[in-house]
Length: 432
Image 1 (cartoon, rainbow, N blue to C red):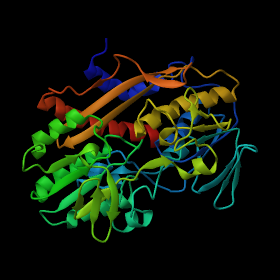
Image 2 (image 1 turned 120 degrees about the vertical axis):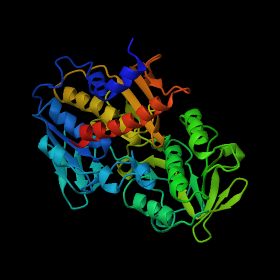
Image 3 (image 1 turned 90 degrees about the vertical axis):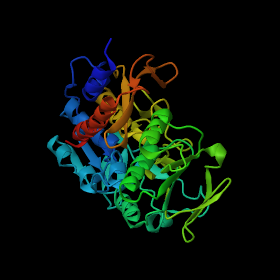
Image 4 (image 1 turned 180 degrees about the horizontal axis):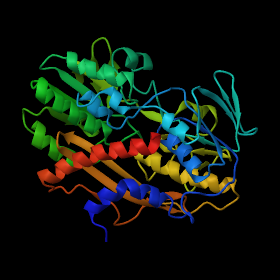
């Protein structure tokens, strides 16, 4: 049996091995040819484009992405806390071009599944044999009274898509007085990076502890529990006095009135179910749904896109595959690593389908690191398999692992080190 220590060491490489395990002959799938258009250049789309070219160099792969640079959401909380800058989470697409991917910076405005054509804002049309759509998330504006996209741009940044709003929120923390209050409001429903709000609270608390120790962070939570809750709270007790009268972090669960009902950008208040809280910095993370083009293309059922989880082909439109945050891949969290792994499964399936082969049997995994403080990381890793009868991705019992609750300081220090190593590995895997 593989030990947890070795599992973590191997996890970055194990993804590629695992997702290709059902594919005899290794990476190369033979010269099927064909045209594939990938919509969206985040972890899902960029990985799919690259791995399609690696699987079959005869496939013509075009990636359409509106922006010339991509800011990873993972590690963006360290930008908020001042431990890294935005450049360190910024990536371009030259690596994909070196793999033979044609990269087009334009915005997709229409996908026609009947004619298998994709149209863009600049008037270009791209035909495809198969399309891969990975648009990430969009926000459900209007779900919280007083909250809007305009307010997020001007006063209350969500910073849940990394980039300029990450910088804006960091600057608000820099400008805040010592003794100020930061409110973080978590979204209801499924959302990107479930542990993210709690890592964010941790790293903002670390910044406040260093520079403005009279200040505090209040987490207004829409729910009563959260990912890695016990590990986070143990870290908060160790580093931020959680549970004491001097705690830098306060957590208000949904049943305690944590779910916010409204926000006032002028008064700088949030209205919870019980109390109205005035804050110096407010970070409302809005409820989420699939990216806009998924709705425009008729790929959604409810907030997300139903797919065959063996190939990630849409259950609504044949020939279009949807992966990453936008897909309804319940069983796996919505995360950059999930999207990266799903993209490899999808790429191999598309290469097989173009060649007239039955796609191989997939396996999946996800590893999620969170940084609680300097030299204090925590993680959870899960290996998944596919239940074809139910079209479900299910965890493999006994596989994976989580940071032990009694982990030593040295083990927690190594977890933080592994988190940064994971970031270097996955970004190179996606964009390199």
